[in-house]
Length: 539
Image 1 (cartoon, one colour):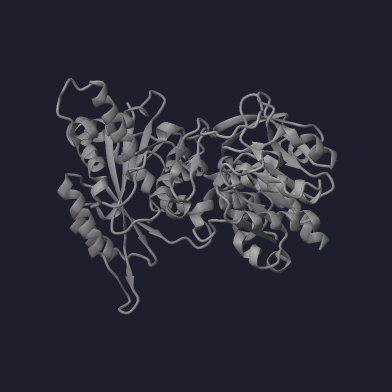
Image 2 (cartoon, one colour):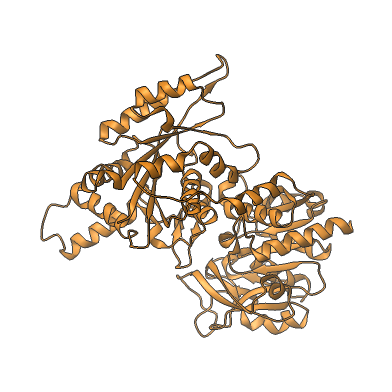
């Protein structure tokens, strides 16, 4: 049977439970154990797919097409496992499932209640991950202890620890140890109160991970341990990292967090092997230069909106031995200023995905500037659609070229829709409610930058979009020099485009950032940064 580790949070939200959970998962895997991860989000949305990026951050897409919480991105980048739809649940999904069963008559007319029906459904989501080949299931609960919406999840945990043997379940609670600058003191009382709330529910944490900006003295560790009913050695310090989030696993290993948990669960384990991880950290510590990359987006003010994009750029920098200097540009700024004024001096431009019309003119202008000035460019999803539109307008002479997404409903001229909703017969349709979600195959044309970067003829990338390049315009686009370097082998839809007379002008309809890893940068991002380094050398 699998062992279960539950990670909860207290005092404040956004403590970094996702990073910490992923870091512990990496340490366990580095000791030869097989690990599964699960994120529980207490909000009532069924999934984050329809949520505003300014509120929730990015939507992380899995191979099987699930729209999930961004913490699954941390899990994939650290642990290395590909996540699936069962690795993320929400209150909305749980309640919807229970209500559908009630409507279907599955409960034989019983009064449906939070206990036992909702809590049983929650526990069922955990047991789906328990398999003979899984040693440890790590389960993270979003939010903080005391949140009303998180109560059913905590109640399910309380029940679960009684249903399994003592050595099957461990609890980790993550809190904040604030530092008061005026008095020069760290304060442990918020942590005491958070644990007290957890114990009132019936859960006694086995380990406390304390986020802090200051070193926690042995005296304070003993104080926290005494008032929270844990051993002093189980009070783990997690200071803010100096240069990279990828330091966190090493920090936790030095605090023996993984060993303590495995001993608590009565598990045998091998010595930890972080050799490749440490080599990656060494590259971050000792870059051989830097490149300035502009990310021109529409959700720039919230860093988490492009979390995987920024991490994939970091990975590409690691692979190329350089530090990435990010210039975060709101696309609307380029609409009120010149692209030259804002983008002058950058060695590469990336235009990420998004939805809606806001900022489109700025993105297209940034792409035009990159194309004309031979500045390396990488387009992601909407970035490809903007690149095709820009090329159609300014190179092919289709001045009124548009995307159906940007046209006013019912009033657009479909004859100029170079980006459109397509049916299975590659015909333009007025409506289309389904997105291409999840992994799709892409055939790569020989002799192209994309084929060279990947090193394979066929690859699979994750998608999250509705609109496609309109096949009716392919002839004129290709006649004027646009290369279709990647196509879906089944639908023949365009996957990747590029320009031949440019140091790096590549755009993909997919989201390759989701598959990038710190120890293995994604090929397109790696190639993009390599071209940016050469661009700097030429200048």
